[in-house]
Length: 457
Image (tube, rainbow, N blue to C red):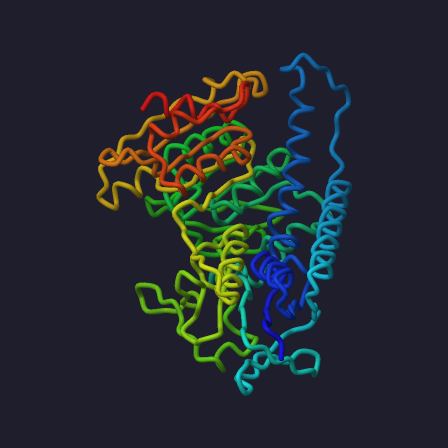
């Protein structure tokens, strides 16, 4: 009998498998597609590869701002996609090597839960049965395709999966949904010359991210030519045309050679026999299941069965999934550990980047907390000014007035994706303003903007 069977080889599953194997457990990992899951094959890595190519092109187009002349700069769409595939292949091979080094058996097939078998759980794949004392479900998530008339019939409609493999660059792209995925693709295609229109039902982009920073990013992309239709409900798709209603009730249309649907993702709860275990679902306020209910140790309601990653429906981020996988394995090993969500960072890899961790000003107010908010333009960082000609940005820090604890840090400006980690540590360690002020930041770095901002608190 195996110690652990894991269904799903994404960031939650393969990290858990590596940790468990390295600790001496016997592990089998089932993945019906490619190791790395959506993140490595259809999400995080391929999109960031595309976005970096777009950023390099941006710099070449505006190199004169830095005293450099780049004559004849051009973009090869096919070459960008080819490089994306090369990066993905290299990293998938790296995950395979990790599994081999950790002694993990990888089964490249659809797994199906057969139920309990003696003291363990039986999983069938490729006609063979595997029995393990513990089962970790990391089945991930899938793109939500809303029930919009004409959407599924349109040949122009794509999700985040299909848009990564387009044969040619679209002249016009309509994006339904202005969340993180929508804005990252808006950034990429806008940079390479595609006309982009974003249609979003909410009155702002980037959903729960800081309102002020979201508005600043929207303004910057509006200057770059991206058109935003906010507070608008898509009511139909007619071939290559999106039909939507404005907040005033007017019916409008916008054309796109391609129409990207990016309205969110949902947990994959069907197709692998989950119902045979009888685990309790996590329910939304309307009483509908949106994931598998887990505790702080990633245990489900069935002893010996764990869940991690998007399938819990809570925090659909790759780094959250990896940490949840670690917590589940530590619980199996009897090591004290628990999952905390106070310091989970969120990043939008647009140009400029957006990053945030902890509570926003609006979230703090909704919780009834008495907070102070201190903010500073990114231009207070000498390194930022040196590397971001005409760049605009902002750093905001949310502080609890009573305890002086840092509750949230939110930023706009490059490279905030790389410096938000210091804020994560501050929040995770429950640091106060006074404690953070004593931390020495290297000079000159953009990260100093956190120190400069907190010094004003």
